[in-house]
Every structure is written in C-alpha cells, then in structure tokens.
Image 1 (cartoon, rainbow, N blue to C red):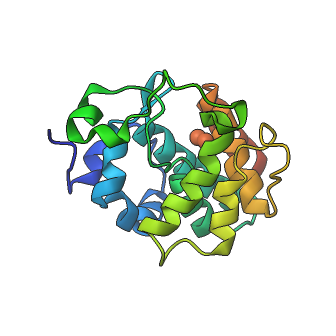
Image 2: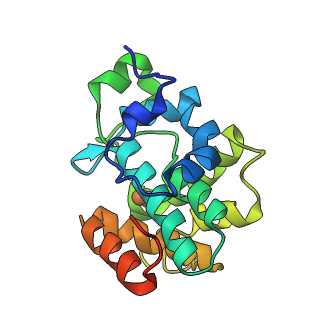
Length: 193
Ligand SMILES: [Fe+2]
Ligand SMILES: [Fe+2]
C-alpha cells in the first residue's frame, strides 16, 4: 500500500498553476508531507479523493485571500485542514487495509447531530490541533470548526478568512471551480494566471 510520496508536486497536478503556486506550496508543505495527512488520498470525498478536495480548497482560498486582502497564509492552512477529520465517512478498501479504525461503521445508527455533516468540522479542528499544534492557532481552529455554516447554524465564522474558506468549500463541493477562477480573475484583475 503506497499512499506516501515525498514528491508532492506529482500529486498536485489537478491545481492550475499560477505565479503564486510556489508561495502556496511553501506554506503548506509541512502538512502535505505528513504521513497521516497523506492517508487522505484514500479518504473518499463525493466522487473523488479527499486529498484533491482539500488541496483545492486550500489553494483557491489562498488566492481569494490575496484578492480580498485577507491573510492568505491562514486561508492556505485552514483550507487544507478544514476536512482533516480522523475517520472516513465512506468506505474505502485501501483505508480498511491500512487500519480498520479509519473506517466508520455506517450501519451504526446515530443521532442526526452526530452524523458526518454536523460533526466533522469540530472533529477536524481537534484532529488538526493534535497533528499540527505549531500551525493551528485559535483563529485557524475556529475557521475549521465553523466551516460547515450554515448547516451548523450555531457555528458562524468569526473571521474574514473563515468566510473565504467556507465559501470556497461550498463552491468546490458543488463543482464550481471554474466560477472561482472566473471570480478571482474578474474581481481583482490581479491573480494573474
Ligand atoms: Fe467539511
Ligand atoms: Fe470540504
């Protein structure tokens, strides 16, 4: 089972390169090279890999932060870790082979508020702090914890960067990546692909 690779660029070919790509990579390299984080290549997310989803949210949040004069480093880190929950919510054979503990028992009945959509943001914040205590400060913790707004109506993003990550996550989850590119290009004329 070879999920781990130190050649992270090879696993980022889904991101459209712009002149800020290397700056983004420098910020998030430590996370991308982490063994636990690389297991997200085997976590499923909608129809693809969680790895692809979180790297996209991170990269496009980072770019949008540049456009909107927010903290792009915070957006890059929080975007990458926003779905770093410890257990997969969809079955994956590869993950089961690494360790059965990664697999949630989907047959187990749960109250609605314990279901993935409601519970994973807080679980991801706690897990992120556990693996990356040097990178996850109170602000990043809060952004991860509130990223499911408005599904989690009581957890409202407190920071501009939190609204960016929440927004980009929603757009990408419904397949609107082109719209994000368009919006960044059009609004600020600056991100310069
Ligand atoms: Fe999420
Ligand atoms: Fe997400």
